Length: 171
Image 1 (tube, rainbow, N blue to C red):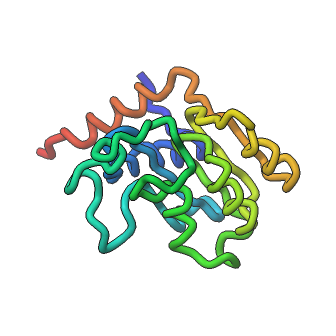
Image 2 (image 1 turned 135 degrees about the vertical axis):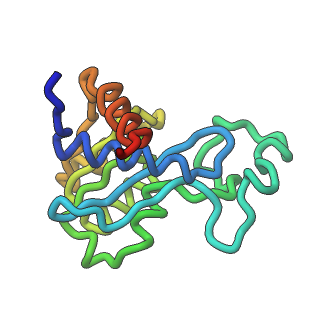
């Protein structure tokens, strides 16, 4: 069987998936990578900011205080979102015209940051849609391309290739 290389979108989405392994949220793991000229310039995952204990270390605040997990966007979580985490690593000038690959469709708060920082393209794998679909509205108005990505059955192929490479023994 001939080995295939991933497309650039597949390649960078695999990076976003890999980045989720750093997430410290006990409920939802997500990751994002920002790309400029086919080079990753920033990565981010959801979790507590630096110098703050994360949920894996101290337990989930929502669990402790019996806050409904679906009660999103009200500032009750210790963690920052993957997209925001990635954007914080670069200046606005560096972010202009870039593409962000995210495991989930950005929430409206992250969408506002994406618009404000001048990113031009958002590629996401899974839908994380708020009831008011403000994210889509913001991106349409700002003329930011929003792409719902699909591996078209090739994800397992690439994961198997990576497993084989990682487990390969040299002679």
